[in-house]
Length: 139
Image 1: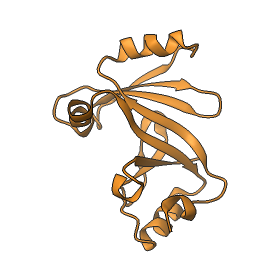
Image 2: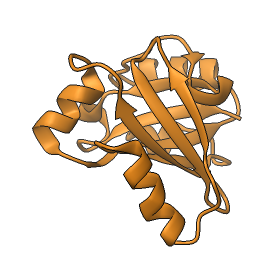
Image 3: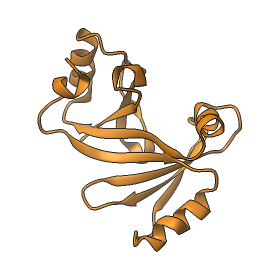
């Protein structure tokens, strides 16, 4: 069974995370596409700055590292700008994590943590999702 088959049926796409080198240039690119001004926040515990655009039924999250030796910085150096992760909404994050763990899905976060905008989040390892870093957001 895949993680997608295990998650509640009412899940939906919450956001797509995109790593960028220059946050202000990236914001300008997406503004040209018609997005409204994003909400920008620093996440010092993750060493990133994030700009979040509302995208109709979910969000677009632009992420840039604020220090050189972090996971996001290494991702950027190795792969360049581009999609970093996909996030899906689940109604009960603790329950979803326990269900995935019992099914043998490799979790990065065994327990929820606080993400951008105070969202309660947890990550699934890319090895369990076809090479895609997957985030779950309680909502």
